[in-house]
Structures are given as C-alpha cells and as structure tokens.
Length: 80
Image (tube, rainbow, N blue to C red; front, side):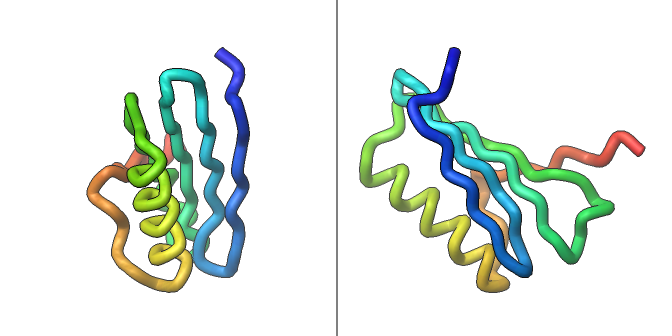
C-alpha cells in the first residue's frame, strides 16, 4: 500500500521517516545519529487519530532534542 504522505525528520540527533497510510496507519523508522551502529528504531500504530499522530510527532521531536525514546518505538538491531 502506498503512503498517503511521507514526512522526513532530520537533525543532528535524529533521522526519521514517518509514513501515513490509509486506515489510518502510521509507520515510523528512526536512526539515532550518535548510536547509528546500534541499528534502527521502528514503530507505528493502526487506527491513529489526529491527536495521536501529533503526540507521536511530538515524541520524535523530543528525541531530536535529546529526550528519551517513546515507548512505541522499539529497537531493531543492526544486521551487521
């Protein structure tokens, strides 16, 4: 299924891509730049409301400012 829209978030601490699909479904992949060798973080939800999407984006913003990783993002170890 093709995304309705894709949002790319980048900065010194975080590089992330947010896909919004019909459903509404949100899929996120993120890389913490200072921990790039640790692998990606992935997460998402199905049936996302507008308020929940804002909360998820706010969570990514917090990570980009040095905050903690939201519970809905989980580590996906590197395949190296």
